[in-house]
Image (cartoon, rainbow, N blue to C red; front, side):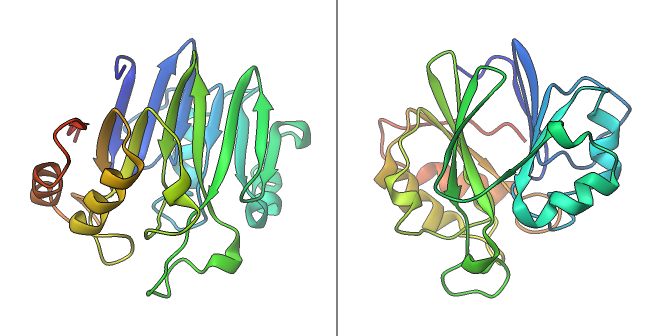
Length: 209
């Protein structure tokens, strides 16, 4: 199920399954200009990076982001019809790909307030549901996420730490989980390893960074 999927850096993910999809492109190493769709979870520099977006976008790229980024994306000269401004707790279909927005926010930290309307995404491709949690703690909303593959932050400080992330994944029970949001700005690969050791036996952990 992970064929065609790469975790590029930090929380930057590329999915190449018919269409080329990027989530939060960051530290992109060259100009690829191959994105059919770009998903942005929120406006922090390690998730919304105009320089990196420009390295993967092409003429007709669709970009999907929370509402507070709409004007900035217009300033980046995306065509108005190619900007999809989203709200939490909604369902959408773009280019035959269905996706849902799951609220992403902190419970006991100040970095990602719920009122900002930032999101994670469940993206459905060929019947498989990929959940990219975004920068979040465990919340009442994301505990209801139904997915086959989950990408979850484990680095702590700004998001859930590896223990909290393991508890969360053991509750929502995807088939496969990929730890992200570690190794550069916050957290280390050891967080991903310790996270994997706390998972229920039936959940497969794939460390891609």
